[in-house]
Image (cartoon, rainbow, N blue to C red; front, side, top):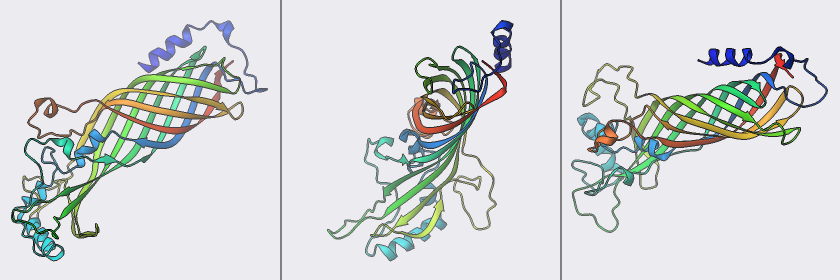
Length: 316
């Protein structure tokens, strides 16, 4: 599709429009290729981060630990050591009747994003761009465990901390427009298009905290790699199971093209997308609209692109 569009755009230009490139000023060429590399900060939507909040509405949750007798015995020993006087019995998540996933708030930390891309300038500020971006997101949340016994005023319930790491890649195909007549060296631009993404849960771990908030005992992985309902057993074989998958959405960008010289510019850019990810939060939800897929969420970032023009293909 990209090849056809570019071929039509090239064929549509009359031969007399082409002229030699001039290098005497910082005016951009109207036709040809731009290549760029960029980096900046990215913020993921907290709705998607709730995949890592430990709730049993998600496919990977804390019951994976509590329902495994080997890990449950280890956990009871650590609780007895650091929370003396509390008998957990059947430890479970503290969830009030009628509550839903939004009582279990998790969030992504601010993370780094890198980007590579190219843009073909058709004419008069219009262009087509193709870009790839990558970011590794980290989420964090905590959950209170519950006890069946009455607690005294000085007793505190144990807390589990959970940290998830997620690799997210996006490919954006966008149409762009450069406002070339605003200023000679500073020109705003807009980009709008479609996106394909791939999200993968890289790791998801839980650990008990002591009364000072420090990790104690074993750090457990909540991603089941044992291909069985109850997970770990001594000597069990592990498998390479992927949690996540492809998704799609709509993306956009806006920024300023600031000329350094005839070949290089710096482009401060605001990037965003409304996307549906391949990580399905609330897969075990009783609500069919969540079980059947994920909803579109807004994600955004700020980055700086270093852009280089290719004069072998450029025409002025």
